[in-house]
Each structure stands twice: as structure tokens, then as C-alpha cells.
Image (cartoon, rainbow over all chains, first blue to last red; front, side, top):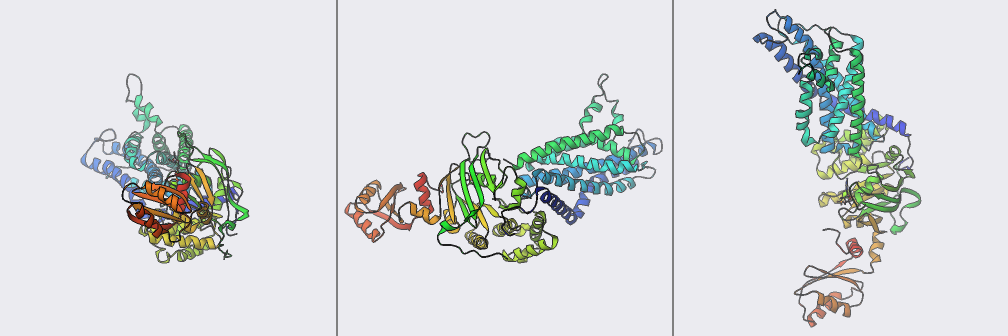
Length: 285
Length: 332
Ligand SMILES: Nc1ncnc2c1ncn2[C@@H]1O[C@H](COP(=O)(O)OP(=O)(O)OP(=O)(O)O)[C@@H](O)[C@H]1O
Ligand SMILES: [Mg+2]
């Protein structure tokens, strides 16, 4: 078999094996750097809930529609914020584990050059990264949620309740949507432009992504009769992720699920299609 | 594990023509927005067991050719086959058959030295145990045994290159592609790599390498294709290529004043001058008769009132062949 000039496997068999190996490699790297992974996953959510749900109530900073009525406003805000924080951490996995990684592998470590010689189609190399990134998103949701729901001042309570079938379907789906977004961003931005990506893409997505407020609450922002902000943020995928997390983890009002599911699936398709096209263009000449 | 193949003296015989590993038919690539093709109607056949060299200056089209054979560059015309499989149509099958070492360091920075090999094995369908065994074997063979657990950041350039070669041949590819394998290596690491490649070849590994070092092509390759502007100008064994220019040696003479006069004098009085050209401050002459050549040249120059600053006689090289073919030097 040594130096044989005929392939030993069909394309499909070889691809299946390669996909398995690519995923194993990514998971090994995750295991090796698990401490670092947990650290960067937890930092932002911890700061958010600490400031908003602990410090603000302590210092009497009004948030959640008034500080006078004995923690009621804060609790309502906590109920809105905790799912929002889970949404943010899912999104950041997409950015960190896919976009930033890929951008570096393309731009300066050139690791991608070798990975695309794997005996499988190019798109599968990209999809493998999306899948392993999504796994990391899932793990981060699982570790962020309990922490986000316990850090708060006395008297502040997030009203949480699990809707299991939504949790089990929507969280994986949103993880894939966010890592697909990561694929698109990572194949678009050169490593030296990563700062631009954070400034002009990631920050606007986060601040206008409905993580600190419900989408329905944006209605009062209008010019004439036009709810411009509420309409504008509809192009932001994070809105649907945050609202979806509210549907999955709380009993507060949220966008209808029959809007959330199809739209998130639509984003997966769009991000994957554009991301894979970019990936192919970057690899082949 | 692998049958040894005698390295033959007559390099023309190398490569079992009944088993082509690489074949290209009018293979061409014109990059978008370029008006001249980077590779122009290339016809090439590489047989099993050969070390085949693409030799050419910067921009000759070597990397583009290797890229088309390794599925990375999409040809604009013509076909390429690895082991009879159309590269364009079945890239996934072809990737099972090739090993690639690229010009840059593409090692996986997140993995250790040994893991770089081990996961490559898994990628190509080896079992966990077999992959671990081959990884350890290759670490020893490539003198990286004590580096297995280290990060790849710890490796020197030469060691990183060796690890990339080990990784590329891990799955016993039908052909190993190497783009400028020794560019940027110090002379010692270069020699070490040449030895490794010769060793692999003697075990039967087919290798296609690109280079712009004529010594590398000369020392290492069974056959060499000299490329420029995307075309093959000559293709043969290094020995035959050098024979083809009909000269045994290169005489270089530096003189005071105008060197052209000397060329005329030498052409008239010395037999076997096949070509000559002016170089900075002197002349370079291809000669086939070297018997007592130096004293004769010195005498001739003196009697014609030309004073010689420096004179030397060297064997012809592939560089000479290239100069004859293109009128320019390989290295600029
Ligand atoms: N991706 C690309 N897009 C456009 N033109 C390219 C591209 N890659 C190479 N070229 C052009 O194609 C020609 C051949 O380039 P190639 O890289 O194949 O040469 P080479 O022989 O490998 O040279 P070097 O010794 O510099 O590596 C050059 O003129 C180069 O400018
Ligand atoms: Mg090149």
C-alpha cells in the first residue's frame, strides 16, 4: 500500500474520517486551554451581572423602570438581562473560537494551508470549525447561565424557568448561527483589521442586540410615527438570539417563536453560504 | 517496510514510465487581471520513484504549477492528473494521494510536535494506535525524538521544516510536493534536508520539488525541468542538461579595460569556445578543451597587451544551461 497511486477510500469515506479528526483536534485544543476558555467566557458576563444586578441596586442607580418600588424593577431587569448575557456569551464564542482563530490561521500562522490538504472537500474543513465552535458556544451557555443567575444584590431575583424543548433546540441552533457568523467575519477580516471588526461589527451587534432590553420595549423610540430603531435592529441576528433565550429561560414576554426559529435558520443559511464562499476564495486561486 | 530501490547512475532510466504519478496536458493558468499566463501549456510526466525538480527564477510559475497539482490553484486550461485521477474533477481523491510541504511554516501552533504528526494520521484515516506508532517512528527518523512533547514554537527553522516533511509523508503519499524546501535554511539544515529527501527517495518516495537553487536541482533531482515565464525550456537529467550545452567548463577572466577585445582573441586562438558573454569587468567563456587552458590564456592576453586581474576555471552548472537558454542569470 505504500506509495500506492490509487486512493484507498472513496471521497465520502475519507471525508467522514477527516471531519472526525478535525473535530477531535479542535476539542483537544479546547481541553488543553480549558482554563483560559472558561476565563474569557466568564469575564464579560460576570462583569455585566455584577455591575447591573449587584452594584446598581446597591448604589440606588435606577434601572429597569424605577428604583423606588423595592426591587421589583431590578428583578424585572434581571429577568431580561440574564438571558441576554447568555446570548452574548454564545455570540462571543462565535467571534472568539471561529472568527478570530480563522482570521489568524489565514493571515499569519498559515495553518489553514495545511488543513485544506485534508482528504475532504474544502467546505467541510470550514464546517468542522463551525461545529467545534458551536460546541464551545454550548459549553459557554451552560457555564454562564448558572453564574449569571446567582450574582445579584439582595432582593433582586431573575424570574427564570426552563422551557426544555426550546432550550434543547434553540440553544444549539443559535450556537451554529453565531459560529457561522464567525466564519463569515473570520474569512472577511485580515488579522490586522480585527480591531475594526470589533469596533464596527461586534460592538454595534452587542449594544443593539437586545441583550439589555426586550425588543418590544424599543417601540417608544420613533421619529414621527416610525419605530425606526425597532425596525433597524431587526437586521441584527443577536436580537433573535437574545429574544430566543428569553423564550427558553424565562417567562417574560418575547418575540414570537415562529419568527425566531425561521429567522435564525435563515441567518445560518446566509452566513454559511457567504462564509463558505469567502473561505473558498481565500483558499483557492 | 519499503523495498529499496537502487539509485541509478543514468538518470534517464529513473521513473518507471509504466506508472506515471504526475501527468499534465497543456496545463495553463492565467491569474485574473493578468495578461500573461503564469503557467503556459505545460506538458509534464513524472514517473514513480523520481525526484523531479522545477527549476526557475522568481515568477517562473513553479508555485503555480505545484498549486495546480495540489488542488489549490484552479487551472484556466488543460488538465492535471495524479495517478491517473483528474485533479480538477476529483480533488478529494487526489488529496489522499499527495503530501504537501508549503513554503511557509504551516505547523499547527496549538499542538505539540508529536500531536502535529498524530492528528495528521487520524486525518488520513489511520487508527489511533497505528498513528501513535508511526508518529514515534517518524520523530526518531527525523531526529526530533526528544522534541515530541514540546510546542512547535520551540523548533528552529530547520527542525520545523523536517517536521513538516515528516507530516507530509505520514500517510505514505504517492507523491510528495515541496515548494522551495530549503529557501531560508542555513547551509547545514539544507544539507540535512537533502539527506532526508534522498533517504525517502531511496525507499521509493516520489518527490516533486520547486527550487531556484541550481545546486539543489543538480544534487538532488533525477530530472529537472528548467522553467521561465510559465514554460519549460528544457527537461532532462542534470547530467544531460549540462552536456547539452557542449562545453565542459566555464572560463572567467577579469581584465583591466575593455574585455571585448579578449573575447575576439580567445575565439581566434583557442579551440572549443562555444559561447561567450560579457560580465562585469570581464568575460565568461564556455570551453570544451581545458588542457593547459589557463597558461595559454594568460600568454595570449599578455602578447595582446591585455592585463589580467583574475582568472578562473569552473565546471559547467545548471546556471550555465539557464543562461544559455534565456540569456539571463538564474539569480538576480
Ligand atoms: N495569486 C496570484 N494572483 C495573481 N498573480 C499571481 C498569483 N500568484 C502568482 N502570480 C503571478 O504568477 C507568476 C508566477 O508566479 P509563481 O508564484 O508561480 O512563480 P514562482 O516560480 O513560484 O516564483 P518564486 O520563485 O518567486 O516563488 C508571477 O508573475 C506572479 O506574479
Ligand atoms: Mg514560488
